[in-house]
Image: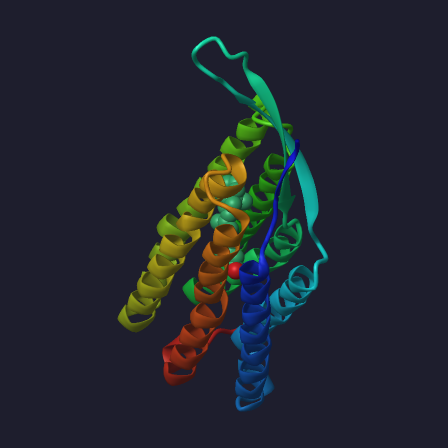
Length: 252
Ligand code: RET
């Protein structure tokens, strides 16, 4: 008999809660954008677009769209002379997340890169490496059951993530520090927060999507907490600090 792994009411309710959080953030950030002159709105616009896009993705997932069932065959070994059996598992893959992340993580990086004043070439490397990370993560999510390719794609995604980290930690930190102590310290704080949060994503993926040691509800809740920290909390911190720190003003 096949086993279906899908969200219960708990998971679905969690998705709706995050949808509401993203919509409220979109409204608040839009209001904050209108409170500053257009020439000083770039961070506001980038950050507002992030939560608007996340609202769309969460609306899709909460209402049951952007989800597929992924088939896996798991061998169950029995002792005492009972022959091994195979179990068909159909687990939900929320591919709307990858659509969301492929747009919103580049925008989140753009926020950080602009804050740090990184060179255009380094910004491009960080953003393209990030897109590679998300898309190879999508390939991993749909990789055939525990095939070598599946964890191969995961490994490639992790390498791409290290390229992102390198750009932010090495190039971003040095240009941010060159902008002066205030911007340097703020970049170190919000950049450190970002790396901490982002690093939990591949860990959750490995436990949930990768090896199915977390059920779908737990997976939804884990990503919900991470997404709220990485988007609305990050965004509010960035915009309020930016508004109060003239040194963080940029000429783009
Ligand atoms: C995957 C799986 C493959 C390996 C790696 C991953 C990294 C994902 C990250 C996602 C960040 C998402 C954010 C969303 C905002 O709300 C694709 C999970 C490295 C870092 C910040």
